[in-house]
Length: 306
Image 1 (cartoon, rainbow, N blue to C red):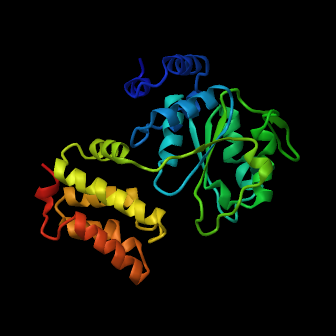
Image 2: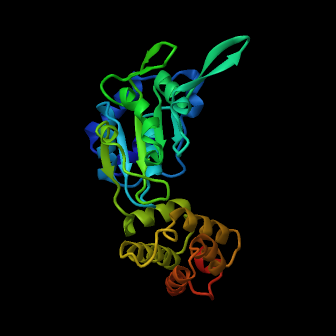
Image 3: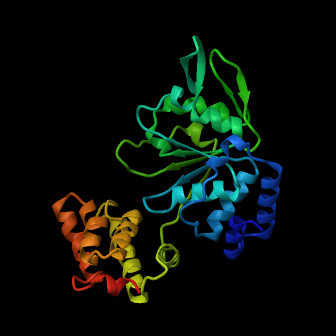
């Protein structure tokens, strides 16, 4: 069995779903020209129920929308699903200036003639890729409205002035969105209706242990316990609106641990990775107090790693 399917077995994902994924992979071969887009994620996603929901939806041709607060692993899940299905990945990052030309394509001048420079959505549809629509709620409604025919039963792209193209059978789209970020807004109801939605659960002790141990196999048990506790303490304070989610940054914690592994003092590392993410002086003081109860000033790298 392929390595990525073994990861599903280890998490006791339903055997019928694993077999269906294997059949999908065998049936939908990837064009040699885009094999370099099949990317192994930096980390496996941990969460049986969420994986089962995502896999079942994608097997049946549905598109997924992953919602939830910061640090819930939306992008990690999207990358893992593409890897599990062995599909080329097309990342489309949305912002306020994203328009239909960025998604579908624009005219360009080549060899004395006008040609279509294909956008990411066009190429994804053409090669049966998995399109990851990152921060989809940051785009203007008129930009994402061009995706309606792509995301529903029509599964096609009508390019003005060019041919209509039918999407490859293996093409799927996975949208991600955070709540409450600057520049975000409510999604158009017509767009949401074209997705199945997974509301990503927050991190817990089990998932954090998996993440930290996977990334840092030599981390000491006491240090592991304190880093997990630090994240959960900050998560609780963010849930209670005592602080914003700026300091609740799993990437920042992993970055801090990396710097400790090469010799930086833990108190300095956690300052860069967690405390300094807050720019409000009062919030920074609250976060600093939480950090000090978990990561003592006296610690050195030998207290964290074997």
